[in-house]
Image (cartoon, rainbow, N blue to C red):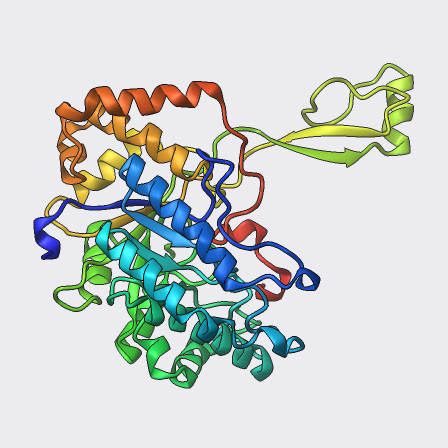
Length: 386
């Protein structure tokens, strides 16, 4: 199917929150002999769910092949090749359902590390995930999304060192690797600089663009430049999420001085959930949001505004709300209500309103919140990246 003849896609990453019985990968410890083949059985069920709810883009777990690149566990190193037929079957199913797949390796995969051993291990991780997509028979839209990495005390040297990591990657990795602007270290201008020197494709992240744009680039021209990094006939993808706006609740120990002040009838500094008493040992402190954090759901007004700015441009959207698929089940009827022109770009039309509203009502039963940090949330990134 020609990419311009189909609606834009909306996708979500990894965890299926609308169906807690669906696992995204084999999470057993090494002693239980976990395997990619088990993970693929889970993916097969996820594809069925995606077809049922008509979601046509999905990010696979970066832990799909457990321990496949663990340097001290050679017994797992051949599991990708051992799963060749199963990978081919899953790839055929994804293509038949027209579901776009991708990976986003963890923040510990660093092509610009100052430690050559870590860079080498990162290349191995990327090569394994690229091999999975190759054995699935996925086309060039199935990509590996990565970030530039750490600053290591020198922004320019670290940015340039990513190019050395790129050059160390085998060809099958470079064919699938795409580079994303991040929120606290390397801006859209930085990844455009790298693209000019490598030709690597770029993924535009909307929230990151607003968090880190010291060069004051304009949104629409920057988005267009990112989209031009993709070859003709291959639809680009971007990332979108809304920032968290609610108070953060953080547990902290109550200091002796605070207990003493409470005993005298004084008030503690800062906002807390409930009063600190003379006998309190722990307090819940209420803090303002960190704007790099992803909200559970997507603000439909914010997204519609962005899509109208991007009118006429062609790209799929990975929605990185922490409520995963649930956020899409909420967003689609919201777009139909508040921005039907935007909804139409994603193939969402009034004739589907009843079904979309029925999907939305299912959310009233409640789902468990995602508490783990997203791979893109810079505030929770590993200290080694600083």
